[in-house]
Image 1 (cartoon, rainbow, N blue to C red):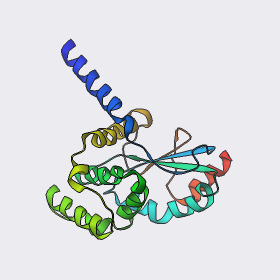
Image 2 (cartoon, rainbow, N blue to C red):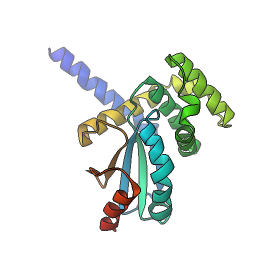
Image 3 (cartoon, helix red, strand yellow):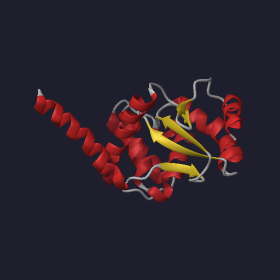
Image 4 (cartoon, rainbow, N blue to C red):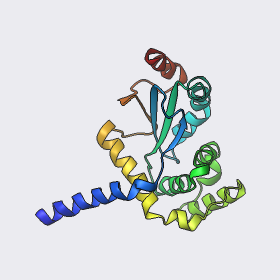
Length: 191
């Protein structure tokens, strides 16, 4: 029994330690008064809607003005989302652009009856969009995979995330219906 417990502890410690070089996908002023955390899955249609309908307004009024920053954290709901997260996370200088493109064009790459078929569509999509990513290297990168899975574990543990998107504002779970009007009301109280 002790051996199993020690193995589990070492596993979680290795996830935390391995991720030291992987950077979060963040938009906005690092020292902003308001920190928004968005737990998302790249195959989630509601997450794509958030990026299409809410994020542009949020970016214009709060992020670009320096009032808030947003951290995109991974909460993959399936293997396709996990692999897409690896691709988005793999190229740090383009991570935010890749993430936005994957959400904007979700239906273009989330096709197929198998993980292999979806990966093939994802690879074609990334190439078509002009992102220079070593697809196989990114998909097989254990450090990035552990970073993504650790996001999911921390989200469940620290914020009781069980659906996507889940928004955290200054370490408090946003419990209202996720639309810009509700989000703005909450943010205005924090300024």
